[in-house]
Image (tube, rainbow, N blue to C red; front, side, top):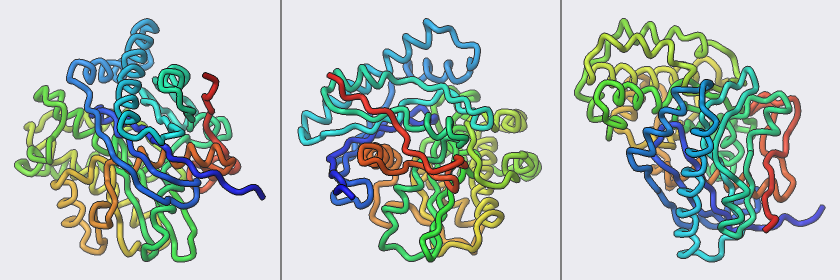
Length: 364
């Protein structure tokens, strides 16, 4: 078997929370991580955030000219960001690009995303792996969650059973058993339902630091209705789009800004807890929270208060950079693609067989 090539790879992620792009550099062969480089955050300005928000809301009635314009602006934003990064670290020799998902309908095997991989690779003159979800979906998978394999790499020295929960636009869980067995699935809503509520009611992009939620009161009747969403009872493997929960989010309409934020945040917490109790073979020793949700102290408080049996910790408590993990995962998967190793499995996405996903762009 040929030896695995090691890459100094830059991963790029852009979540449906619409905050911006996260980028991170790691040195890896797709099995082990040898070095962690710098992490970068490039926030969108409010005008572009609103353009993206409108694309999400208009889907599938999106004007093609509008889509192309927004995609070009997004790609140019990524190019500018990557050039800034490589001016500081010229050893980067591969990019793992997650693009930006506008709509993901996993049960219909539909993925609508923006981000011009070829233009980004050419502009930066660095080989790039993109379209990481496509082959999985063509193989009968949900196209998500994809970070599970990377979570396993990060967990080599951690006690097990163990779970990771990435709270992004939706929330996704990875379970790693005592003998290395693994499963992964989306648990339910994430930051998107909180951000959408706050934005609609106040024009503020998000509930910064959970300050609105902590000052509000959870409406138990509304929360009970939210928790009856059919997605939460579906057995894994399963994946969701942020729009999956739009129907139930309407139940927040009669609440104050603060009470709605508190109730939406409790919905995120309780759906994670329900998934752990309903779908894992045993309770994990720790549940590591990463993604944007890890920086929401109100969400972290709700998780700990509402399930004393489970030890919830932030990835930062374990020595990791919580908001860099998804970007690192895209870099890790890009390296696996280049080394011809699987990027998803039947027990992570529901694909019919293990899949080597991603398209390589290196013709410049």
